[in-house]
Length: 100
Image 1 (tube, helix red, strand yellow):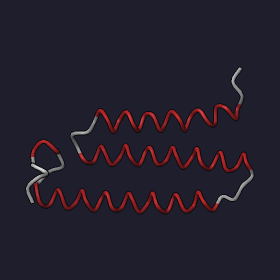
Image 2 (cartoon, helix red, strand yellow; image 1 turned 180 degrees about the vertical axis):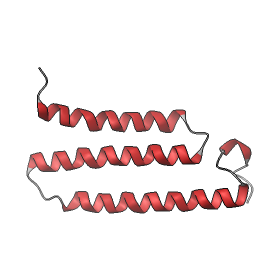
Image 3 (spheres, one colour; image 1 turned 135 degrees about the horizontal axis):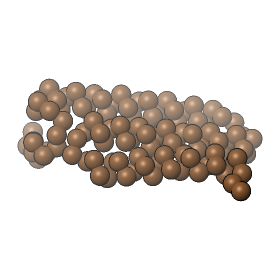
Image 4 (cartoon, helix red, strand yellow; image 1 turned 90 degrees about the horizontal axis):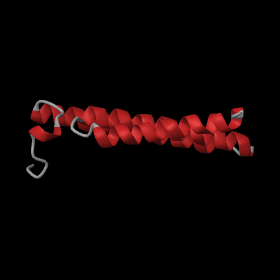
């Protein structure tokens, strides 16, 4: 029988690996890559908050991590908007990254 605490650690690990799988397999579109990175960040945040709660330590570090994840998401969306405005779409195969 699986205990509740081990299940609470297993679910974020599955989220992280699903995010990695999505990042590796759907790498043609920039929006799919950004969504899978955010899904991985959500899994890491959930795992970190569970671990910090079980240890009994301060939760402020997880809030700092959540702030950095939000900044990473906004920076990724900004890059997506710049790519779409300059090249017309977010498909990586349609433009060359070496030309400026």
